[in-house]
Image 1 (cartoon, rainbow, N blue to C red):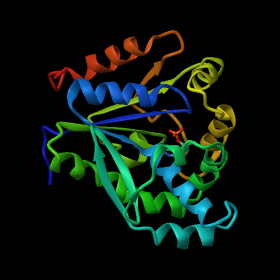
Image 2 (cartoon, rainbow, N blue to C red):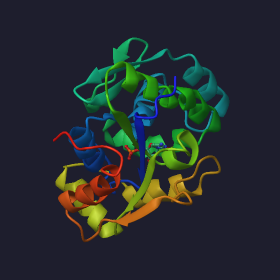
Image 3 (cartoon, protein in one colour):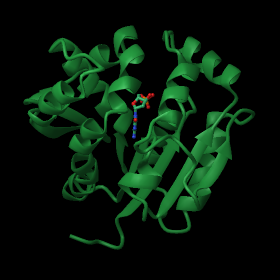
Image 4 (cartoon, protein in one colour):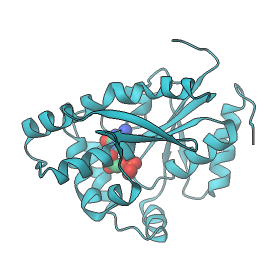
Length: 225
Ligand code: DC
């Protein structure tokens, strides 16, 4: 189903670059479905770790990943992945073990393939729940998942500032190591897609970043909040 009034906003960037806070704020301001694809890779990682699948066994990863039944639950404006009928809670996907392994699983092409159509399908989920569009954040949204998105942004910030933000959230996360792995993988590496709007948030507040992106979206859609 195509619907010209349903807008797609792609936000890519490295770990702790401000994607989630920005996407959440935009979803409220414009009544968009918020889709955090990092949480999908994290949910897969938590499930594969639970099944004792090793990161260096691509065949085992492929068969385990393709056997998972995927569905979506909507919580507020956020899309949450259901694996085999169960929402994987935040407490299970933001652990040090998931932080340490997610980039290794995310580098396996078959795992990315298993998530591709599911991610694109979030547009239909958004439409069927009455949203005016979706804002999807990740690493390859503007390059692979929705290269024709109405708006494509790439957020980055100084690594010292990003580490400070993660620590302020009380999280133990090796941001630069994850970025290195995400940038150097062969399939869908983290990079600013050609034609995307590049935003350096190092010296901007969250509100300033949200206002900046909102000014782009407002050319197509009036804010609701
Ligand atoms: O956004 P995040 O930090 O929660 O993402 C966790 C990991 O998931 C990230 O290090 C790489 C992977 N990822 C990806 O490869 N592609 C995406 N579109 C989103 C996340």
